[in-house]
Length: 343
Image 1 (cartoon, one colour):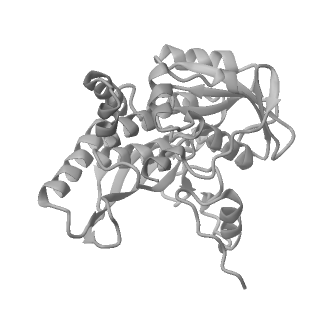
Image 2 (cartoon, one colour):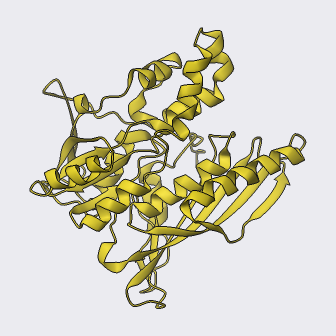
C-alpha cells in the first residue's frame, strides 16, 4: 500500500476527523454533548446538581509564544462561553523546548496565566510543566472546566433552516495581534511605524480576544439557536463547521465580511487572506429571523458591533458564497492562513 501524503499544519481535515470520531466508543448517558465537528466543548451531566451541567474544554496554543498564558485561558474560556457556561477551573500543561528555555521563560508564562485568570475569577486547579525536546517553541495546552444552567445551554449544532447568521465583534482580532507580535522586526523593516505595531499588538487586549460578555448575553436571552467561536481556520471555516454541526446549509454574503484597514494591510504584508485567519475575539450566532433584531440590540447595547452576514438553508452540506450579488466559490482553507507566517 502506498504511503499517504503528509498531513498539513493545523486542524485535521473535516473528512478525516469525521472518520476518527466515528471510531469512538458509544458514550454513556452522562455525555450530553460529545466530540463533533464544530462543537466547541463537551457537556457532562455528573448528577451533582439538578439544574446544572459541567462543561469541559481542552485546547493547545501553538501559534503564539508571547503572552501564551493569556491566549491559553481565553481560547478555552471562549469555547465554554459559547455553550453559555461560566469558566471556573483551569489546568494548563506547559511544555518548554529543551536547550533554550530559561527560568525567566517559565516565570513569564506563569505570570501571564495568573494575570489572565484573575479578571475571570478562574482558579488554576492543577496542570503540568516540563522541559522537553518534543517541542521547538513553548506550547501551553489548557483544560478548562465550568458550569452551565440546563435552561441556557447552547451548542454549535442548534441552527435551524432560515435562521439569520450574525457575526459579533471585530475580526480577525487574534490574527492581527499575532502578526504584529510574531513578525514585528520584519514589519519594521518594511517601514511600519512602531506606534502602529504597538496598536496592532494590543488587539490582544483591546478589543481583546475574549467573547464571554456577548456569548453569555446571547445565551441568557433565549433567542440564540446556535453559537460558535471562530478560531483556527478563520471565519469561513467556523461558518462551515457550524453548518455541519447543525445539519444545515449556509449562504453567506462576503461583502458583509468587512475588516479594518489595519487588518487588511497586515494580512496583505504576508499574503494572507483574513477570511481564513484565526479569529478569536469574534462570535458567530444564529437566530430566528423574528428574534434577530432584538438580539442585535442586546449585543450592541453591550458595545459589541453586530452584522448580519448570511442565512442558514435547508440544503445540508451546501455552502454558498455571494459577492456583488453573484455566487462565487466558497473560500476553503486547508490550514489557517496564520501558519504561512512560518512556512
